[in-house]
Image (cartoon, rainbow, N blue to C red; front, side, top):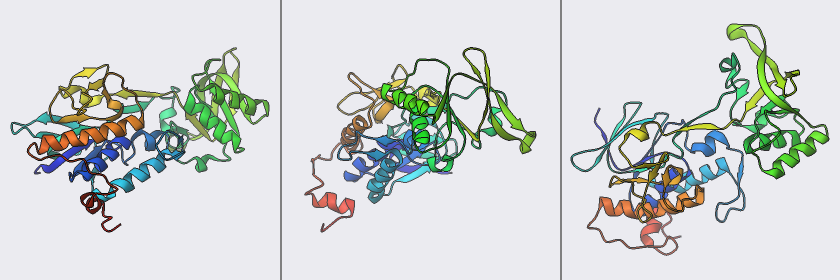
Length: 347
């Protein structure tokens, strides 16, 4: 199979990767976007699609999936080509100075520049750690909430002491869904206001809280016919609690892994890619990095910061691809060229 010729390959279809499409498009540069996940959105879609975000400029509140949908709409005029559900396995410099990129599906690219917008790399949730749990994952045992409406009114047991666990305890219990919350310690990593709200719901009899650990699953049947009926929790005082449940949620955090990125010969600093703050270029000319995957003095892991990085990287990429071309800063409010590229000519 011949390699796909690309001006730019973007590795990562999270918010920063999607905004990179837009910023490149404004400069007349097209992109192919690769991601191991089945849909664009990165962690926003995969981990907290219903969670509100409050620090996106001009949007006082925006759901994580809503943000992804808006970014997709914004990038649409530039017709990005998506290659999803396959991990990028190879990245190397060719003799021509261009880049060979390949994914686990066997698709190869010949790219003029590469942007790594891979967030924290590939990630896997920390599992619940009881025998037989893997047979129920995705049906009765979950590590994220895809569609909250599917679980309203069901009997839920939620494990974890961080923000995700407490947010969902409060969300579900606040809507009348029966919730038992289990955390192994009396201390919490969640925001104090979230803990206080959980305690209010507990005092009102709308949340049952147990300090303890999952001990075993309660199951009817065997093999493919097995059905989850609940979970046995061993409390800190040694007592055992048999909890009936339709669904279990475990929010124990993630195992972030760079995966193949660590093997591409790029300079790393504590599992992040070193970049400069002029071009957001890595140690290899022509390979850039934006978002949580990069690091530099003063780095802040915010979506807002990643958007800024993508804007500056776009100009650096344009210069890398077309060094003889003069660069002009044009404004989307007034530039006829920008209007044409955005499909709003005559607006």
